[in-house]
Figure 1 (cartoon, rainbow, N blue to C red):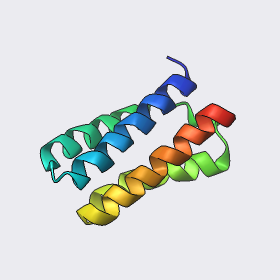
Figure 2 (cartoon, rainbow, N blue to C red):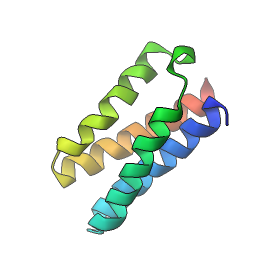
Figure 3 (tube, rainbow, N blue to C red):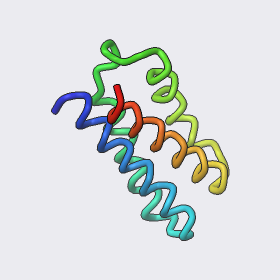
Figure 4 (cartoon, rainbow, N blue to C red):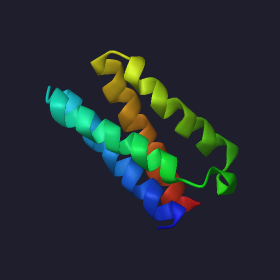
Length: 88
């Protein structure tokens, strides 16, 4: 898989995390968060812009946030990653 596909899948996983938290389905949100962390490890960061590297670094910090903040940030990161994939 190339970086574009992995980043697209990561964006979808983060969107599912946000939706799961919004619906109070914490089990589902946690499952997709774990998947997002696995996908993050698959990415070749040497080819990414510095801003995208910063976003990827911040994804791990989602685990320490309360569910409302985590949902908001997961959705924001999802959108930013998706825009990066589509327009870069």
